[in-house]
Image (tube, rainbow, N blue to C red; front, side, top):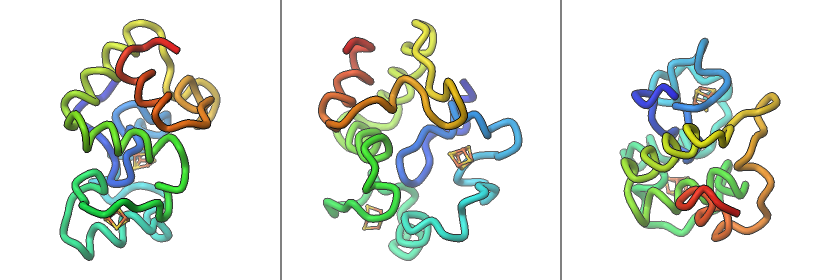
Length: 124
Ligand code: SF4
Ligand code: SF4
């Protein structure tokens, strides 16, 4: 885990992304998807660094997907450092963020609250 890459504006984990050997993270402006990313554009316009720091209950762009939405909700509730701590601990316990391409152990969820519990406890 490259903890220093942190969490993307949308909530995805740049620190664990399989692309992070060639991308310096969302904040670097190197993300291949940066030109169409609605969350990037909107949060820059609002002058906030991440969607989890936004007061709106929003499902725009990447937040329409369970994973970035749940990660953002987690950071909103417990803070970014707590999210990074849990991701780091889970990784040590064998939970893989990107197992194949861009899917892994955090992707098989259809309920954001269940995913939040999984991030927090490492257990299903
Ligand atoms: S590709 Fe996107 S999610 Fe992956 S490290 Fe770059 S900005 Fe982060
Ligand atoms: S309105 Fe939505 S996309 Fe825009 S900064 Fe807030 S959470 Fe992010």
